[in-house]
Length: 456
Image (cartoon, rainbow, N blue to C red; front, side, top):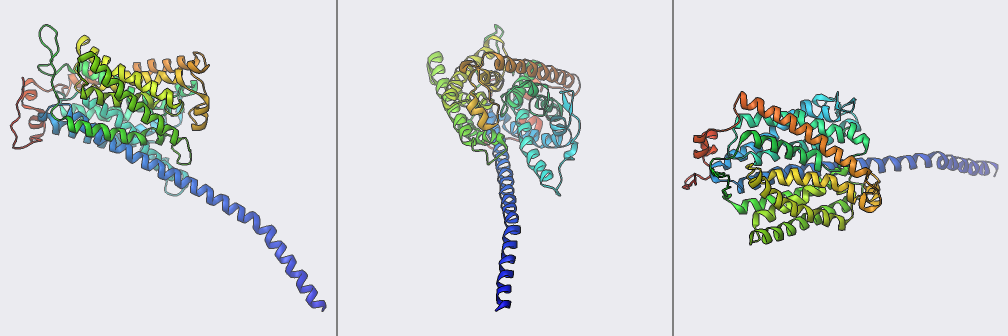
């Protein structure tokens, strides 16, 4: 009997010991599992977003091909292929370190070159691989914007060199200022997904390139009037626009870099509404101004709305997103006309207007429409813009960013294009332009067997 009682007490003591010591281990295991799941979800989300943004390269290629002439289609496709290929290597070797390395005076990063911070041995090291992939497709987007503005008369070797330098130096410096711990980010500038970092960089570089390059043959008459040079395949351009719209759902929501951040839903909504409003307002503006609902203007209205919402997408309400996109849709129509007829700058696809002008508008829109409730939940920054009781402070910070980014990119890109013009040559000859860059630069035709007529 005594032995039985002892055995029962011993069993109870053992059971109590197991419960008391094992419960914390179970809780810890549960916490570890939850943490591991969050890391896995975040990693998958950022990679899926990166793949969506990569697919935007196809969108840009089709838009640019559709809005230009058949005799230059292969050249444009090659430029889109090579700016991503060269840009990937340049950003791996130099750009990523300059953008996200240890801060030096708020101006640039100083380590992490050649992806040296990444490692397959630790979770943090593995995350660096995913983050690099996401940031690389953004760098390539900034580079490829310039391709359309400089289409149909740029020498291919010069474009290859330019693609390297924008991804290695020009773009990463801006990225560090705002996203990498640099001086503009420290002042409180908000550019959640890159109206300034990505699109304004491409727009300002395109502006410099078009100035140094000059217009296509036959674009302007002796009296200064402008001739339309129609694109050869509007259906291709339409497909490109839809691909870009689709890819933007990786561009903007993906910039949370976290699949466990439920504000990705809000960001997707603001992104979509702004694009839709941009398309509608560009269509009506062109209809009123030119007498017809111009198809190419409506397409650019979509892109204008997307570019404009890229900075404020995580900080504004759906209604504000519609207003931002609508303004962008109006802006892009007047900007395209002003740049073409008043400034006499030849931009075949409207890249300066879409990415430059509407990128500036989107950056400033943060200072007007931001609401702290949206910014707090997304991590963009809990600030209120001018229209929601925040005063002028955020707007002035955004304006400082616009001016600083413009000065750096336009200045550095102008210097680069000047050097290229004096060395390897920037502009194709008149004969090469007449024949088409497909034949003269690449020795092939995009549409073999078809007779292609020129208006020049």
